[in-house]
Image (cartoon, rainbow over all chains, first blue to last red):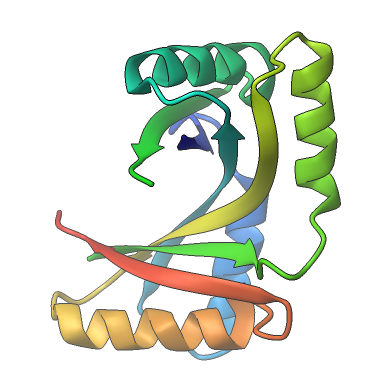
Length: 81
Length: 81
């Protein structure tokens, strides 16, 4: 069973990495770029095949380790495999 | 128009960040974790509304700046907004 956890800074939190990437794109001539936000994701491979259990466990991992709920939000997605 | 670019290390490239996260999860008691790979994504907001043009431009940005095609692969996804 595989799952992905997508982690992004909350919209109210300033994203300096995204800002730098946006500036770099502008300086490369992509003047239609209005904003860039950067995030990360984790692809977790688990033993055991029950989707509901897997989703619950991965959500717990996101809360405890993968995301910082104070400034980040996350989304868990199960992959059919 | 918004698009997301997902960037991951190619499967043959060692992912030390993912390894550290997997070890941390194991030490937290998640013994069913077999592997973790980490990736990043960019959410790009563009002026202009034509989806085909936007997709082509964002793919070009990924090739030039957002991903390193030697060791990373990427996927572009347009968001309906």
